[in-house]
Amino acid sequence: MATQQTLSLHRSMYMAQAIRDAIRVFDDFATFAMNKSDDHYVVTISDVDPDVDGDLAGEFCNFALAHTIERKRRTPK
Image (cartoon, rainbow, N blue to C red):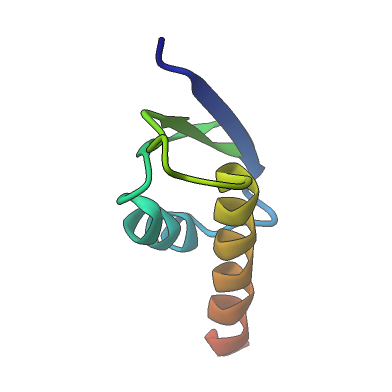
């Protein structure tokens, strides 16, 4: 039985490109789909590799948030 997890990432905290970067990096471990919904990006994680140990969703969110911060720091004000 395949399990699926849905993340709701607020658009004020996460940049779309940073989420896409995270999807690209983590795509060896699971299948990801991203959509916009009101003030959130909704990321669905499915088909997680059974060899993955730990909190894939948590690591994914941390990566996306860190890359959002890096991108915002590089953006001229």
